[in-house]
Image (cartoon, rainbow, N blue to C red):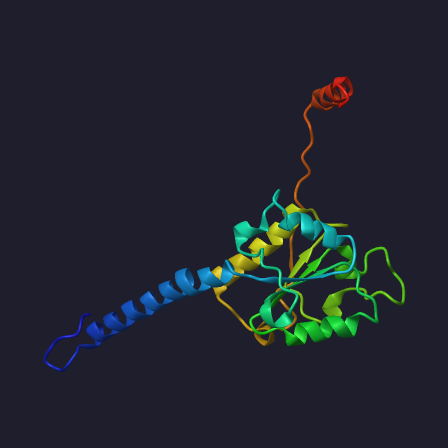
Amino acid sequence: MGLNTSGTASTAEASFATTRLDHALDMIKKHGINWSRKNSLWPLPFATACCGIEFMATAASRYDLARFGSEACRFSPRQSDLLIVAGRVVMKMLPVLQRIYVQMTEPKWVISMGACASSGGVFDTYAVIQGIDQFIPVDVYLPGCPPRPETVQEGLMAIQRIVREEGVKSSHERGKGLQLVIESAPRVELGPGLRERSLADRESAPLI
């Protein structure tokens, strides 16, 4: 490893051995430990409105959340590390949400799914929390009412990229959270003539 056998090592040779060891440890941590962590994020869906239905669609076979290792939805805070707040949160529900967040073990992340969880949405009333980031840290915001399953997947992959590149940091080190905003997935539009053709084929199809 760059050290001589006489019992004395030169400064260059010693630093060479230390550098190679640090490099090996970094590679093991980045491509081993962090790789395992990013592919085993277990979500806890705190679903209170229509965003919960979109999350169900994300976990179903069409979008298949299991590809990212997050199909194991745990409804126990001690067995999950990703809190997904899907829907509006009212004042009476806020202590329950805060208790669930405190009971989650480190490391833990939070996704604010939809306009209602992020800013209150259309419910600008005294009973609805105007943004959960006033009370718990938020790492990723998902815009939309409700967000499409592609947006949910992009938010999950954003957390995976952070875990892979920067490693795992506790919620105390992140402060108010990473506060990343995910862009909505582009809507697919049919080309000229294809929409009319699809409607005509649908009308001419025999009834079963």
